[in-house]
Amino acid sequence: MDDRTLNDLLRRFGLSDKEVDTYLSLLAHGEAKASTVADAAGVSKRYVYSVSESLAERGFVEVNDHVVPTTIRANPPDEVINRLRSDVDAIRPGLEERFSRVERQTEQFEVIKSRVTVIKRVRSLLADADSEVTLSISADHLPEIRDDLVEAVDRGVLVLLIVSGADEAADVEGGLDGVASVVRTWREAMPTLLTVDSAAGVVAPPELLRRSNTDRQAIHFSQEQLAPVIVGSFLGNYWPAASEVATAPPASLPVEYANFRHTVFQATLRLRAGETPRVTVGGRWTDGDEPAEISGRVVESKQGMVEPTTNEFPVEHSLVVETDDGETVTVGGQGAFVEDVEADLVRIEVDDQETDETGATGEE
Image (cartoon, rainbow, N blue to C red; front, side):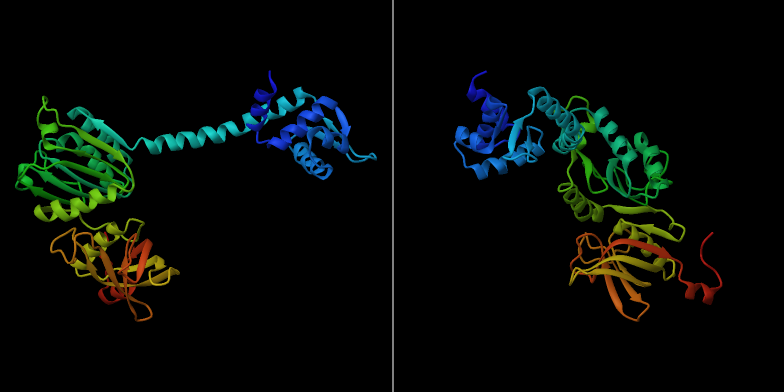
Protein backbone atom coordinates (compact mmCIF):
# COMPACT_ATOMS: atom_id res chain seq x y z
CA MET A 1 0.00 0.00 0.00
CA ASP A 2 1.43 3.41 -0.93
CA ASP A 3 1.82 6.19 1.66
CA ARG A 4 -0.95 8.33 0.21
CA THR A 5 -3.55 5.55 0.46
CA LEU A 6 -2.45 4.69 3.99
CA ASN A 7 -2.66 8.36 5.02
CA ASP A 8 -6.17 8.67 3.57
CA LEU A 9 -7.38 5.56 5.37
CA LEU A 10 -5.99 6.72 8.72
CA ARG A 11 -7.66 10.10 8.31
CA ARG A 12 -10.99 8.29 7.97
CA PHE A 13 -10.54 7.20 11.58
CA GLY A 14 -10.36 10.82 12.72
CA LEU A 15 -6.58 11.39 12.65
CA SER A 16 -5.36 14.78 11.47
CA ASP A 17 -2.49 15.10 8.98
CA LYS A 18 0.00 15.79 11.78
CA GLU A 19 -1.36 12.91 13.83
CA VAL A 20 -0.94 10.60 10.85
CA ASP A 21 2.66 11.78 10.33
CA THR A 22 3.46 11.32 14.03
CA TYR A 23 1.89 7.87 14.16
CA LEU A 24 3.64 6.65 11.01
CA SER A 25 6.97 7.92 12.41
CA LEU A 26 6.35 5.95 15.59
CA LEU A 27 5.56 2.83 13.56
CA ALA A 28 8.86 3.25 11.74
CA HIS A 29 10.80 3.59 15.01
CA GLY A 30 8.79 1.14 17.09
CA GLU A 31 9.63 3.07 20.27
CA ALA A 32 11.36 6.44 20.47
CA LYS A 33 11.84 9.60 22.47
CA ALA A 34 9.57 12.54 21.78
CA SER A 35 12.48 14.51 20.30
CA THR A 36 13.24 11.73 17.81
CA VAL A 37 9.60 11.54 16.69
CA ALA A 38 9.44 15.33 16.45
CA ASP A 39 12.40 15.47 14.11
CA ALA A 40 11.07 12.66 11.93
CA ALA A 41 7.52 14.07 11.71
CA GLY A 42 8.57 17.70 11.35
CA VAL A 43 6.65 18.90 14.40
CA SER A 44 7.57 20.35 17.78
CA LYS A 45 8.44 18.18 20.77
CA ARG A 46 5.53 19.73 22.72
CA TYR A 47 3.16 18.79 19.89
CA VAL A 48 4.42 15.17 19.96
CA TYR A 49 3.54 14.93 23.65
CA SER A 50 0.07 16.35 22.98
CA VAL A 51 -0.59 14.12 19.98
CA SER A 52 0.77 11.06 21.77
CA GLU A 53 -1.74 11.48 24.58
CA SER A 54 -4.55 11.67 22.02
CA LEU A 55 -3.24 8.61 20.14
CA ALA A 56 -2.84 6.72 23.41
CA GLU A 57 -6.49 7.36 24.35
CA ARG A 58 -7.52 5.79 21.04
CA GLY A 59 -5.21 2.79 21.46
CA PHE A 60 -2.68 3.62 18.72
CA VAL A 61 0.34 4.12 21.02
CA GLU A 62 1.53 3.73 24.59
CA VAL A 63 3.29 6.55 26.44
CA ASN A 64 5.97 5.38 28.87
CA ASP A 65 6.18 8.37 31.20
CA HIS A 66 7.59 6.32 34.07
CA VAL A 67 11.04 6.44 32.49
CA VAL A 68 13.32 9.36 31.83
CA PRO A 69 13.29 10.55 29.15
CA THR A 70 9.71 9.66 28.29
CA THR A 71 9.37 7.29 25.38
CA ILE A 72 6.46 6.57 23.08
CA ARG A 73 5.81 3.10 21.69
CA ALA A 74 3.54 2.19 18.80
CA ASN A 75 1.14 -0.60 19.69
CA PRO A 76 1.21 -3.66 17.41
CA PRO A 77 -1.01 -3.10 14.35
CA ASP A 78 -3.09 -6.19 15.19
CA GLU A 79 -4.02 -4.66 18.57
CA VAL A 80 -4.91 -1.34 16.95
CA ILE A 81 -7.03 -3.01 14.26
CA ASN A 82 -8.85 -5.20 16.79
CA ARG A 83 -9.69 -2.14 18.89
CA LEU A 84 -10.93 -0.23 15.85
CA ARG A 85 -13.01 -3.23 14.81
CA SER A 86 -14.47 -3.47 18.31
CA ASP A 87 -15.39 0.24 18.22
CA VAL A 88 -17.05 -0.18 14.82
CA ASP A 89 -19.06 -3.17 16.06
CA ALA A 90 -20.11 -1.18 19.14
CA ILE A 91 -21.52 1.71 17.14
CA ARG A 92 -23.22 -0.49 14.54
CA PRO A 93 -26.55 -0.89 16.44
CA GLY A 94 -26.81 2.86 17.06
CA LEU A 95 -26.07 3.67 13.43
CA GLU A 96 -28.55 1.09 12.16
CA GLU A 97 -31.25 2.36 14.51
CA ARG A 98 -30.82 5.94 13.33
CA PHE A 99 -30.58 4.90 9.70
CA SER A 100 -33.87 3.01 9.98
CA ARG A 101 -35.58 5.99 11.62
CA VAL A 102 -34.36 8.38 8.92
CA GLU A 103 -35.39 5.91 6.24
CA ARG A 104 -38.95 5.80 7.60
CA GLN A 105 -39.11 9.59 7.73
CA THR A 106 -38.04 9.93 4.10
CA GLU A 107 -40.81 7.56 2.96
CA GLN A 108 -43.37 10.35 3.29
CA PHE A 109 -45.44 9.78 0.17
CA GLU A 110 -46.75 6.70 -1.60
CA VAL A 111 -48.66 6.86 -4.88
CA ILE A 112 -51.64 4.48 -4.91
CA LYS A 113 -53.20 3.36 -8.16
CA SER A 114 -55.96 0.97 -7.09
CA ARG A 115 -59.15 1.10 -5.02
CA VAL A 116 -58.17 -2.05 -3.14
CA THR A 117 -54.92 -0.48 -1.94
CA VAL A 118 -56.69 2.72 -0.88
CA ILE A 119 -59.08 0.75 1.34
CA LYS A 120 -56.17 -1.31 2.67
CA ARG A 121 -54.22 1.83 3.64
CA VAL A 122 -57.31 3.42 5.21
CA ARG A 123 -57.94 0.32 7.34
CA SER A 124 -54.30 0.14 8.41
CA LEU A 125 -54.22 3.79 9.45
CA LEU A 126 -57.51 3.48 11.35
CA ALA A 127 -56.10 0.50 13.25
CA ASP A 128 -53.14 2.65 14.34
CA ALA A 129 -55.21 5.69 15.34
CA ASP A 130 -54.49 6.82 18.88
CA SER A 131 -56.35 10.09 19.42
CA GLU A 132 -58.12 11.58 16.37
CA VAL A 133 -59.48 10.64 12.98
CA THR A 134 -61.02 12.89 10.35
CA LEU A 135 -62.48 10.99 7.41
CA SER A 136 -64.68 11.50 4.39
CA ILE A 137 -65.73 8.39 2.49
CA SER A 138 -68.56 7.43 0.19
CA ALA A 139 -71.61 5.58 1.51
CA ASP A 140 -70.82 2.71 -0.88
CA HIS A 141 -67.42 2.08 0.72
CA LEU A 142 -68.23 2.76 4.36
CA PRO A 143 -69.19 -0.91 5.00
CA GLU A 144 -65.64 -1.97 4.08
CA ILE A 145 -64.15 0.03 6.97
CA ARG A 146 -67.08 0.06 9.40
CA ASP A 147 -65.51 -2.36 11.88
CA ASP A 148 -62.26 -0.38 11.94
CA LEU A 149 -64.16 2.82 12.73
CA VAL A 150 -66.17 1.16 15.50
CA GLU A 151 -62.99 -0.20 17.05
CA ALA A 152 -61.37 3.24 16.94
CA VAL A 153 -64.36 4.83 18.68
CA ASP A 154 -64.30 2.05 21.29
CA ARG A 155 -60.60 2.87 21.95
CA GLY A 156 -61.58 6.45 22.80
CA VAL A 157 -60.50 8.01 19.49
CA LEU A 158 -62.31 11.17 18.36
CA VAL A 159 -63.76 10.31 14.93
CA LEU A 160 -65.24 13.04 12.73
CA LEU A 161 -66.86 11.36 9.72
CA ILE A 162 -68.45 12.65 6.53
CA VAL A 163 -70.37 10.09 4.48
CA SER A 164 -70.63 11.37 0.92
CA GLY A 165 -73.27 10.36 -1.62
CA ALA A 166 -75.96 10.21 1.06
CA ASP A 167 -78.69 12.60 2.16
CA GLU A 168 -79.39 11.12 5.57
CA ALA A 169 -78.53 8.27 7.90
CA ALA A 170 -81.20 6.04 6.35
CA ASP A 171 -79.31 6.16 3.04
CA VAL A 172 -76.28 4.44 4.59
CA GLU A 173 -76.30 0.65 4.45
CA GLY A 174 -76.02 -0.85 7.92
CA GLY A 175 -76.72 2.46 9.64
CA LEU A 176 -74.30 4.68 11.52
CA ASP A 177 -74.49 3.31 15.04
CA GLY A 178 -71.09 3.51 16.75
CA VAL A 179 -69.04 4.40 13.67
CA ALA A 180 -67.98 7.90 14.74
CA SER A 181 -68.14 10.59 17.39
CA VAL A 182 -69.97 12.83 14.92
CA VAL A 183 -71.33 11.85 11.52
CA ARG A 184 -72.33 14.21 8.77
CA THR A 185 -73.69 13.37 5.33
CA TRP A 186 -73.33 15.15 2.01
CA ARG A 187 -75.17 14.12 -1.11
CA GLU A 188 -72.36 15.22 -3.41
CA ALA A 189 -69.36 13.06 -4.33
CA MET A 190 -66.19 14.17 -2.61
CA PRO A 191 -62.60 12.98 -2.25
CA THR A 192 -61.69 10.36 0.29
CA LEU A 193 -59.80 12.39 2.90
CA LEU A 194 -58.29 10.66 5.91
CA THR A 195 -56.02 12.02 8.62
CA VAL A 196 -54.94 10.09 11.68
CA ASP A 197 -53.51 11.82 14.76
CA SER A 198 -52.61 14.85 12.56
CA ALA A 199 -49.59 12.88 11.33
CA ALA A 200 -50.57 10.63 8.40
CA GLY A 201 -53.40 9.95 6.01
CA VAL A 202 -54.77 9.29 2.55
CA VAL A 203 -56.13 11.58 -0.17
CA ALA A 204 -57.99 9.89 -3.04
CA PRO A 205 -60.15 11.33 -5.83
CA PRO A 206 -63.71 9.96 -5.98
CA GLU A 207 -63.13 8.45 -9.44
CA LEU A 208 -60.48 6.07 -8.07
CA LEU A 209 -62.93 4.38 -5.72
CA ARG A 210 -65.85 4.42 -8.19
CA ARG A 211 -64.17 3.09 -11.33
CA SER A 212 -61.60 0.38 -11.99
CA ASN A 213 -60.33 1.79 -15.29
CA THR A 214 -59.39 5.30 -14.22
CA ASP A 215 -55.91 6.77 -14.42
CA ARG A 216 -56.49 8.87 -11.29
CA GLN A 217 -54.17 8.21 -8.35
CA ALA A 218 -54.29 8.54 -4.58
CA ILE A 219 -51.59 9.62 -2.13
CA HIS A 220 -50.74 7.95 1.17
CA PHE A 221 -48.70 10.46 3.19
CA SER A 222 -46.84 10.43 6.46
CA GLN A 223 -45.80 14.01 7.20
CA GLU A 224 -46.66 16.00 10.30
CA GLN A 225 -46.41 19.29 8.39
CA LEU A 226 -49.00 18.24 5.80
CA ALA A 227 -51.59 16.46 7.94
CA PRO A 228 -52.75 19.58 9.83
CA VAL A 229 -53.31 21.31 6.49
CA ILE A 230 -55.58 18.45 5.39
CA VAL A 231 -57.43 18.63 8.73
CA GLY A 232 -57.89 22.38 8.25
CA SER A 233 -59.29 21.85 4.77
CA PHE A 234 -61.60 19.11 6.04
CA LEU A 235 -62.98 21.24 8.88
CA GLY A 236 -63.04 24.48 6.90
CA ASN A 237 -64.32 23.43 3.49
CA TYR A 238 -66.16 20.12 3.74
CA TRP A 239 -67.44 19.77 7.31
CA PRO A 240 -69.61 22.95 7.27
CA ALA A 241 -71.19 21.91 3.95
CA ALA A 242 -72.35 18.54 5.30
CA SER A 243 -75.39 17.89 7.52
CA GLU A 244 -75.08 16.46 11.02
CA VAL A 245 -77.01 13.19 11.34
CA ALA A 246 -75.53 11.38 14.37
CA THR A 247 -73.59 12.22 17.53
CA ALA A 248 -72.18 9.79 20.07
CA PRO A 249 -73.15 10.13 23.74
CA PRO A 250 -70.61 11.78 26.05
CA ALA A 251 -67.88 9.64 27.58
CA SER A 252 -68.15 8.54 31.21
CA LEU A 253 -66.29 10.78 33.64
CA PRO A 254 -63.60 11.22 34.77
CA VAL A 255 -61.59 11.13 31.54
CA GLU A 256 -58.30 12.63 30.31
CA TYR A 257 -57.34 13.81 26.85
CA ALA A 258 -54.11 15.03 25.30
CA ASN A 259 -56.08 15.71 22.11
CA PHE A 260 -57.68 19.09 22.76
CA ARG A 261 -60.38 18.84 20.10
CA HIS A 262 -61.64 15.75 21.87
CA THR A 263 -61.63 17.68 25.15
CA VAL A 264 -63.74 20.44 23.59
CA PHE A 265 -66.09 17.89 22.03
CA GLN A 266 -66.74 16.14 25.35
CA ALA A 267 -67.12 19.41 27.27
CA THR A 268 -69.55 20.68 24.65
CA LEU A 269 -71.73 17.57 24.95
CA ARG A 270 -71.85 18.09 28.71
CA LEU A 271 -72.74 21.76 28.36
CA ARG A 272 -75.49 20.90 25.86
CA ALA A 273 -76.93 18.48 28.45
CA GLY A 274 -77.16 21.29 30.97
CA GLU A 275 -74.11 20.21 32.95
CA THR A 276 -71.08 22.27 33.94
CA PRO A 277 -68.08 19.94 33.70
CA ARG A 278 -65.01 20.54 35.84
CA VAL A 279 -61.56 20.47 34.22
CA THR A 280 -57.95 20.40 35.34
CA VAL A 281 -55.68 21.78 32.62
CA GLY A 282 -51.93 21.31 32.32
CA GLY A 283 -49.99 23.34 29.76
CA ARG A 284 -48.36 26.74 29.40
CA TRP A 285 -49.35 30.41 29.61
CA THR A 286 -49.19 31.75 26.07
CA ASP A 287 -48.11 35.26 27.07
CA GLY A 288 -44.98 34.20 28.94
CA ASP A 289 -44.40 30.55 28.01
CA GLU A 290 -44.43 29.60 31.70
CA PRO A 291 -45.95 26.29 32.90
CA ALA A 292 -49.64 26.52 33.72
CA GLU A 293 -52.02 24.37 35.73
CA ILE A 294 -55.56 25.56 36.31
CA SER A 295 -58.71 23.98 37.68
CA GLY A 296 -62.26 25.19 37.34
CA ARG A 297 -65.63 24.86 35.67
CA VAL A 298 -66.20 25.05 31.91
CA VAL A 299 -68.70 27.81 31.25
CA GLU A 300 -68.44 28.02 27.46
CA SER A 301 -67.00 26.21 24.46
CA LYS A 302 -66.13 27.55 21.03
CA GLN A 303 -66.23 24.79 18.48
CA GLY A 304 -67.38 23.68 15.05
CA MET A 305 -67.74 19.92 15.50
CA VAL A 306 -71.40 19.70 16.55
CA GLU A 307 -74.41 21.87 15.86
CA PRO A 308 -74.96 24.62 16.66
CA THR A 309 -71.41 25.71 15.98
CA THR A 310 -70.03 28.55 18.09
CA ASN A 311 -66.54 29.18 16.72
CA GLU A 312 -65.59 32.25 14.73
CA PHE A 313 -63.34 30.39 12.28
CA PRO A 314 -63.28 26.68 11.28
CA VAL A 315 -60.27 25.48 13.28
CA GLU A 316 -61.11 27.41 16.45
CA HIS A 317 -61.72 25.00 19.32
CA SER A 318 -61.38 26.45 22.80
CA LEU A 319 -62.87 26.46 26.28
CA VAL A 320 -63.72 29.26 28.67
CA VAL A 321 -62.96 28.16 32.24
CA GLU A 322 -64.01 29.86 35.45
CA THR A 323 -61.14 28.94 37.77
CA ASP A 324 -61.33 28.15 41.47
CA ASP A 325 -59.78 31.58 42.07
CA GLY A 326 -62.71 33.25 40.36
CA GLU A 327 -60.81 34.20 37.20
CA THR A 328 -61.97 33.59 33.64
CA VAL A 329 -59.33 31.84 31.52
CA THR A 330 -59.51 30.80 27.86
CA VAL A 331 -57.86 27.51 26.93
CA GLY A 332 -56.73 26.37 23.48
CA GLY A 333 -54.93 23.37 22.03
CA GLN A 334 -51.51 22.85 20.53
CA GLY A 335 -50.18 26.04 18.96
CA ALA A 336 -52.67 28.26 20.80
CA PHE A 337 -51.73 31.93 20.89
CA VAL A 338 -55.10 33.77 21.08
CA GLU A 339 -56.13 31.91 24.24
CA ASP A 340 -54.58 32.40 27.67
CA VAL A 341 -53.40 28.78 28.05
CA GLU A 342 -52.09 26.20 25.57
CA ALA A 343 -53.22 22.83 26.95
CA ASP A 344 -51.12 19.66 26.89
CA LEU A 345 -53.43 17.48 28.98
CA VAL A 346 -56.96 18.02 30.29
CA ARG A 347 -58.87 15.98 32.84
CA ILE A 348 -62.66 16.30 32.78
CA GLU A 349 -64.61 15.45 35.92
CA VAL A 350 -68.09 15.79 37.33
CA ASP A 351 -68.50 19.08 39.17
CA ASP A 352 -68.87 18.18 42.86
CA GLN A 353 -70.82 21.34 43.60
CA GLU A 354 -73.31 20.54 40.87
CA THR A 355 -73.62 16.96 42.14
CA ASP A 356 -74.32 18.16 45.68
CA GLU A 357 -77.04 20.47 44.43
CA THR A 358 -78.78 17.92 42.20
CA GLY A 359 -78.05 14.77 44.14
CA ALA A 360 -77.02 12.95 40.96
CA THR A 361 -73.87 12.63 38.88
CA GLY A 362 -75.40 12.16 35.47
CA GLU A 363 -73.29 8.99 35.06
CA GLU A 364 -74.56 5.49 34.62
